Image 1: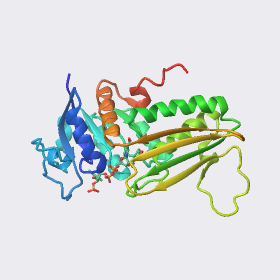
Image 2 (image 1 turned 135 degrees about the vertical axis):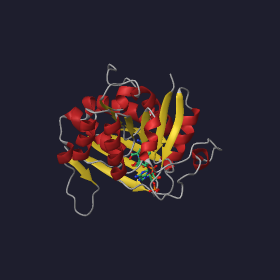
Image 3 (image 1 turned 30 degrees about the horizontal axis):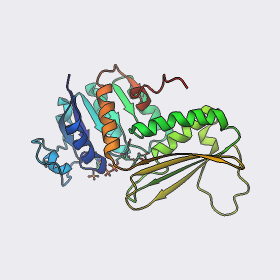
Image 4 (image 1 turned 90 degrees about the horizontal axis):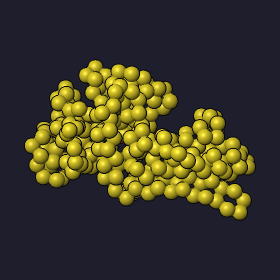
Length: 271
Ligand SMILES: NC(=O)C1=CN([C@@H]2O[C@H](COP(=O)(O)OP(=O)(O)OC[C@H]3O[C@@H](n4cnc5c(N)ncnc54)[C@H](OP(=O)(O)O)[C@@H]3O)[C@@H](O)[C@H]2O)C=CC1
Ligand SMILES: O=C(O)C1=N[C@H](C(=O)O)C[C@H](O)C1
């Protein structure tokens, strides 16, 4: 069966890659794409937005025009995502959310939306990063209680949120595994006389530079050795292809709140 997808934020960096991934993905039919009202891309052919030739589908700012889709894919902004969630709840449409930067209360609201429609929230839709989350769980369980844990992330100059959604999820996975509260143990950057490192903290460091697509490293450092677990994305198509996989999977799910670990079967993987 073909899954009909619509892309929200289709003129953005991810949006353009999502158009291309949707066209290439077996079992997916791209049926619509949305841009902000008044956008210069409104009424432009989606294929031309993505630079892949005409597809005969025009970008719209009318969200009601997306009702032809089975699944909506949202890589936009926090405000826009909440408008899209509202619409999806009203129309019982499945929604894949790749947007990042939500605080705890906003995540709780997104989880609650899952009671009314299938919702999947993934700060990173690449297979590699989701496997990395699993590796962090194993590592934290084995050596997390006596090593210094630091998370580093680097992204392009245009990124608006920090630390990245992926880095925050890395911290959350480690904190959960160690029974720590991330809100209490996270340290975001250091400056001046910081005193010696508190062993219970999880540090975050952020770089914003040029066109870096996305790099994440977790350090587990002891005296005498350190383990570094790194993921580097080299193309946004990795995230876009993962989002198509998520959309296909979500189209067959009942109402509920899901993540990429569900899609990839990593929750039940024995470690
Ligand atoms: N989960 C993952 O794997 C990944 C997640 N991301 C996240 O995805 C989000 C987008 O990233 P990126 O593509 O780089 O950002 P961009 O700014 O390039 O794209 C966002 C797009 O959303 C559009 N938009 C904003 N508001 C609306 C609206 N109300 N209706 C329709 N479209 C709207 C913007 O339009 P306009 O330009 O007109 O404002 C823009 O085209 C970020 O939160 C980022 O962190 C990014 C990569 C991977
Ligand atoms: O904004 C980006 O570009 C990315 N954002 C995501 C995040 O915040 O984790 C994922 C990816 O690293 C690219």
